[in-house]
Length: 191
Ligand SMILES: [Zn+2]
Image (cartoon, rainbow, N blue to C red; front, side, top):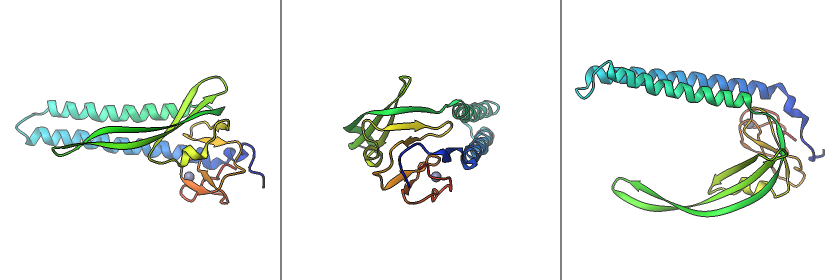
């Protein structure tokens, strides 16, 4: 079997089902969190001497509502995202450090940031950044042709002929190139 070319398996209904399920779960999850915030602040307002209802309740509505909005915008973003082709234009390894604290203890934490830079054929720039893990960094080579699929947060590589691994284009799990379906979400692997 040839591992060169963008896969037509993207048209498998498993992908639209995956996106629909992901959206449904984010909505359910956000409603649960929002309800917990409202109930939690209401109880706080009733029992604490620091704050009273309805002020506490309003804060609960504020936080809950913000959470619902974030999820709503994420879903809209997913729906509005389009398919595009592009190229891997650059890669970069950066040694970085950031300040951390645990309790009264402040310290510096070193980490390595692996970034792959992509550019769509109409000039838009994207990047994949991963901390302390070079799997994706090694997976993409400068010059590789890639395709972004609508609603999915992943990039299919045109030439997979030299690969031993493949990332699921739906859930991003790492799979063996010899497999046909993702071990985790059961979507077809695009090859
Ligand atoms: Zn998957």
